[in-house]
Image (tube, rainbow, N blue to C red; front, side, top):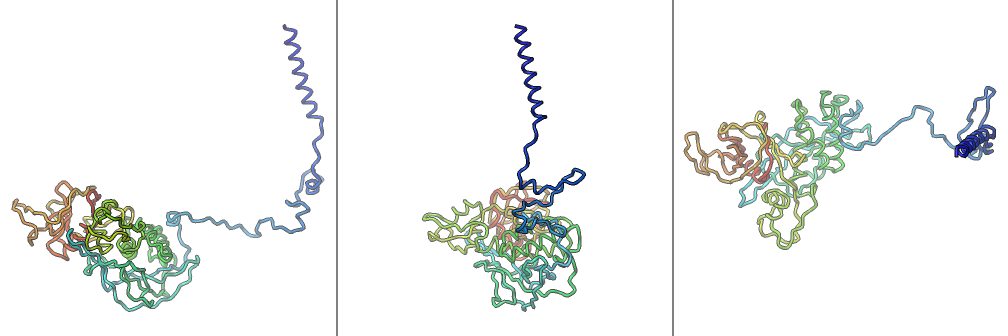
Length: 437
């Protein structure tokens, strides 16, 4: 038995030794003629590769693809966010460089009750057409030569009526009336500041992202991408430490974009909803989680119960949410991440609003108010600070109207002017989130 094992080991070792000897003594295979012609052996034994192409292709003078100068590498821009922190080259003109707009008329929200739908209207601003001068763009983007003109809500007096949601027009064009908003042509100033100040009239390097976002939104607006432009700028609405000029530049674009994207009859958020045989506006509003008054206001529906089957409606998918800035005395609406408008407010001490996030628990059009002595003040009384709208946030805190149609009151909790309160009542839903800061 031991003899067999020893013999097997000897045979195995001889096989390995023979294989190694064959591998070492066998010459390598010769190279193909075409490849051998391409190789040049120097005297020192090194190889030179005269060409990366075989002789059969060398006569064609094919370019190797290596540029004489330094190669230029370009990469696509995949998203808006990748552009926001990349500065534009100094000297690149902006398609919408304009000074702060001074509106001649201003939008406001005026609404009714649940029995009669509230009406949103924006008055047409009539102002002299401004001269337009087309500026060349270093990046090949077209210049819009337009400026959004939207006022602060504190000055709002007219009605907001979106009508058909017509496109923004330059005031110098043949179409001088613009139902949704006014956009006037601008004249480029010879003293425009170079660099970022030229593009967005922003001088603070800390807000480089905002400057680029404004330029991107202007290009999206010029390409009729209204929803995308609104999304681009909405990100920066809550940016802290904005200067007054920067916030004015931002708001002057956000307000008209929100009016066009959300409150006009253009289908920029959802596909049109075709009314079914037995559908009512109330049922449709429940599907999209918004008050029926909002859909009635946008689509100019008089009877929420009886709607002609087959009618196409503009729909908005809610719910909306609100942010209350007590110090700035302003309530801002958002639809998801999209800026959706703002209202001036006043703040009372019955009770004092406390910071936090709350949920709308109840809505009433008339609510009895109890003063400090516990005496009831009936709805409709000039002494009742709730006016014609009361929105319960829980913990005795609320958002309410005012006895005055155009001015909030400093009594109660968080007050809006009566006209604005009607509109907010038709936008905020039960379950909507309200954040107080």
